[in-house]
Structures are given as structure tokens and as C-alpha cells.
Length: 375
Image 1: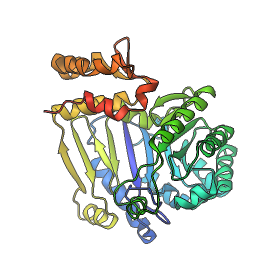
Image 2 (image 1 turned 120 degrees about the vertical axis):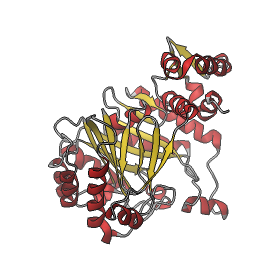
Image 3 (image 1 turned 180 degrees about the horizontal axis):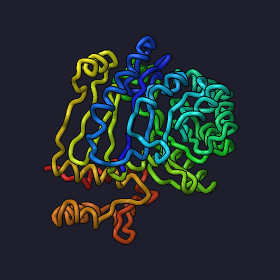
Image 4 (image 1 turned 135 degrees about the vertical axis):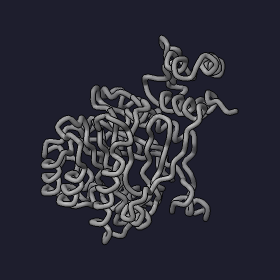
């Protein structure tokens, strides 16, 4: 099995926190779809004779494509058996969704919707430069549910400047009340080159206190686990059986192909990424060239990636796999590095798996870094 990621870079405007590649040049949509089709045709055999069983349209804002454009894109992905494809996700913005648009999605292979809500508080949305309001977000979720989309995820952000524990609690309560089966929640990060980092540099905003952000994360875990959600990855919560199959495959080192400007790919031993520029991407594809840069992963890279992706999940790091894939030396190194975190209660040994404890979740980056092998 393998996954396909398709980057749709189009946005009406840029959110101040986002560092993903995007473009406001809507005049290039048809050209871009043709380039996606051509790249797929040129690269679809890269993963070998495996079935694509998950497809993810991310962005940018995929819902900036109209239904006919999406239909054209899906039709061009020759060789994918949509009847056998277990999960086809599209990211959407709430304000793009109308009854007709959602009805159009029903007619496509899409069976999962990921909605970027970020907050149910209008002042937060205004600060983040989001296009929708809280009311639009609620109505958009209900539109999807009424159309029969049961597999629905919403994104939230915590740790905003001026955000209180109480206002964050109200956000989580609202997401729970909407009865969606999947919630992703991310701590606000001041990525270099974003409008948010520029505001911070100029002293116009102050970062949320780290201790308060940790309290928000802890409150999130408590509230969602009480409602029956499984905390299956550091930033992701799902009702039983409603995990994101596509993203779970990433964390389980399943190969995936990424097409489109800035899209990344991984085949088990190399990593590649496409040029993060819409026009350059189209120019390269149209001239018959590949648009990606290729990196050969070293033995240590592969081990470190395996540690990183595994420890992020509730299933943890399979030590038998560490020994099988990377040998006894890395296995013993991993155990030695983990020991101090086991003793301090940050990691727990569950059978042959190392898993983060609740305490360890709060310092997961440090723990993973300690288990990495750096020559």
C-alpha cells in the first residue's frame, strides 16, 4: 500500500501563521491541474507495483478549486482504483462551503473532509487572518454532516497571544458539541518568514506563556479522552476507528508520493521535494523535466526518522523493529538513551514498545532528540 499527497497551493489570502507554500494567482488553476496530471503520469510507478489506498488533497486551500476542476483532477489520476481507495481526504475552508459545493464533493471520490477552523472565537480568527467567522464554521460542519460526510475532522490552534485557558476550553467544547469524530489541535508556532513572526519581531505580539500552553494541551487531552477520543498522535485525536489513515501511514513509514508545488515524497530510502513555486513547477513539468530535488537517506537518517514518527503515536516505538531494521547496536543505543526517560517517568516500556507517558508528551521533542543517533 502507499499514499498520494496532492498539494493545491491556491489561497484567497495568506494566514499570518502559515509557512506552507501558497499562491493567490487563481489564473493558473487550469494550467496547474494539467501539470499535476502530467507529473502523476510521469511518477506513478516510482513506488513500485503497489496500490494507492489513501489520497490527501492539502494546501493551500483545495476548496478553492471548483467541483468541475476537482472532477477533472480526479479523472486525470489514471490507474487509481477509487473503489478500492480506503480514504480520500480534502482540506477545506469553512467559508468555501455551500450546499451545492458539498453536494458536489459527494459526487467525487472524496470520503473524508478536513476543515481548518482553528478557533470558534471571531477575534482569534481576525487575528489569524482567517476568512471565516465562527458561525460560518459551525454551519459548514453541519452542511457536511447533512450531506452524509461522517468522516470529518476539524483543526484547532491553541497558544494564541492573549488566549486564556477559559477561552480555549470553550473552543474545545464547541468542537465536541459538533460531534465530529476527529480533532487535530496544534500549538501556535512562530515560523520564520510568516506574518506572525514579523509581528513578534516588531514587538506587536507576545508569545503565549509556555506553562499556559502546556495547561491548554493538558486540558485538551482531558476533555477529549473523557468524550471517548483516543489520543493516537501528539496533535491528533479520534473516536475509535476514525484515525486519519493517510497521516497514520506517514507515522508508520509507509511510502508516499507527493505531487504539486512543494510536495514531498518518501519511498523508504530517499526523500524528495518539489520546487515551492507554482510557475517554476509548471514550467519544469511542461518541459518534460522533474520538478523535485532528491535526497538519499543515510542509515542514521532512516533510524532517526523511525524514532521520530513512531514515538509521536500512541503505539510507540517498536523495539523489535528497531533491532530488525537497524541492528543490535542501534537497539542497545536506543535502550540506553531511553533509560533516563523511563526512570524519570517520561517513557514507559509496554511489552516491546517504548511509549510516551502523559508527562513525556509535554517534552516529546527533547525525548526524541535524545534517542536520535548523531555521529
